[in-house]
Image 1 (cartoon, rainbow, N blue to C red):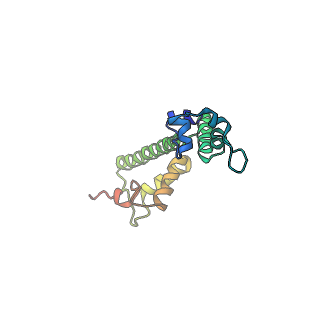
Image 2 (cartoon, helix red, strand yellow; image 1 turned 180 degrees about the vertical axis):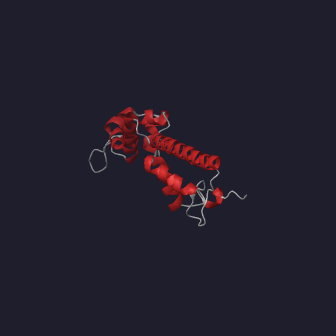
Image 3 (cartoon, rainbow, N blue to C red; image 1 turned 90 degrees about the horizontal axis):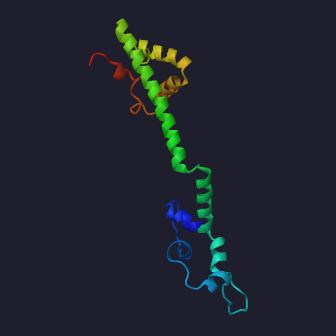
Length: 160
């Protein structure tokens, strides 16, 4: 299993004992299987037994089971990014459609105050029916305003 994970580049050995299972191999199979007699008369575990109890083997086992289930971190992040991208695209489309509607009707985007105006109110109305728009509006007003500027009053300023 450890050699499969190393070949698949999902795990790499961190100690010399694990490297024997993945890179260098064994030259003394008797020692690998049975271990050796210690000076105190007790029998020590062989390399296979030591490796089986090692942290490196446990990590390889986790990587293996995760790969079998198809839930590796990269794919989960990729799916989350894909969903975020779809929601962002839907919100941006709605924002542009609201702006286009206001432009066709000859209505001003902003009111007298920076936080109120036709564009903001129209987006809030659309947000009642589409959760991705509501999420985008909430995100643009609560998080870093320099990151989400499509609903910002400065972007809506038609005097530029």
